[in-house]
Length: 239
Length: 283
Image (cartoon, rainbow over all chains, first blue to last red; front, side):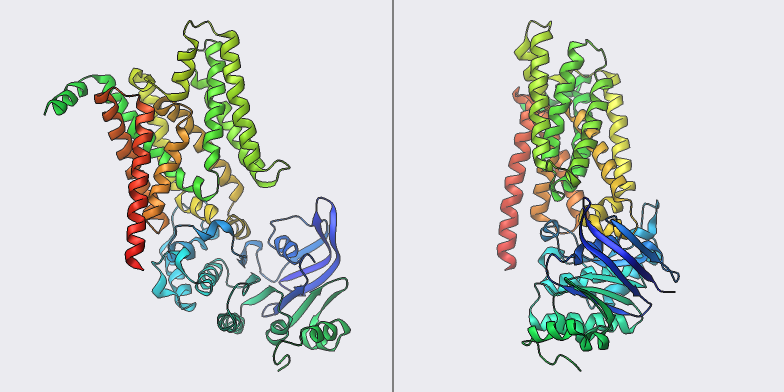
């Protein structure tokens, strides 16, 4: 049984479908990269996986002991957050909110968990700093630490490196790789096919055709070869 | 010390003490949710709702209701719920919906008052509803008690739901995805705001309510960097401004509502300046 099984899923807005016949599975420990052009429905797929939006058709089955709200989420930055007065600790702690239910305040264990995740992301020294004054890479680490407070199993990352400079981008990818090694299942939306092929175990390519399979299958497939040729600029595609 | 003696003399009157108590409580409540309103880009909701409350008050006046709260409170709460609903996924965008409702309610309120009013001093009535004028100095003990109870409820709810309000304000999608009932809390925020606005109509009148909601939060955001410190400072500042505003207005004989708002504006200017100076030093 897989964590997430998607069968014959259709996505779209107001009965206007933008994506049909989507099938894929995510098992514990996978690192799935979802690639495709802008407007192909990647973000809609992510919202549907998070139950922020209803699918038009098809099914998303959650299994293997995963609960629907055990999926951690790293969203793209919103405008509101750019000038939000909040300390790093407050934001990381808010990741524990889903566990609270109706309990009004955070427990000792939850505060402890927030501290652990901050040190795991290497941002403990920033705990009392204001979020809006941090660099882009530091802000992403804060949001990752928050997502880790919400889950120990699955992380969904929406364009985690957009707007970061090349050095920080590599750091970010390495950080995500380490999390995956520690047993956290990763689902990542990305533009960067070269990086997807380097780090991911599985690829879902959404385009006029849909491809889903392991990285090696992708490299051998026509669609994979075609898009990798287009991205020649990327360094060392296969390792 | 003549001024001080005058103040002591005034404080012996119960209506002055009532005004101070109610003023402080309302200022405290309104500042608490101001931070959330500003950050969620809902600053104008306060304005829109206060106009709705004005319209409701006009209807209540025409119907000759002795206790107009019975009508004003539910109408304002329903409007608040509708406004926040449309903010999320509507064909008419949030800010346009607010503008429509607010101007519409204002126009209908004045129209109703004008057509059906039995009062001889119509423009005086309208002016005092819009700008508060002296209604805070004519509160009965019953009204003070009601105001105090509602304020205490608002404060308790805010403290109990503080962490949830933070989570929903900072990142609604994340909160929803990880199992927080964000829509329910948005509803709660809307209802609390409506209650605060109806309360605050007594203090500053319906036109100046936004100022009471927004200014302390904006001032605090110039100076402080965590959500908790911003919330606490804006509550303190709001109470301070309301107190000094009421006292100034009593001593100088100026209208209560506009004096409080004027003090809020001055406080904002000071905080803004202090923020710039501090920012300059840390660079």
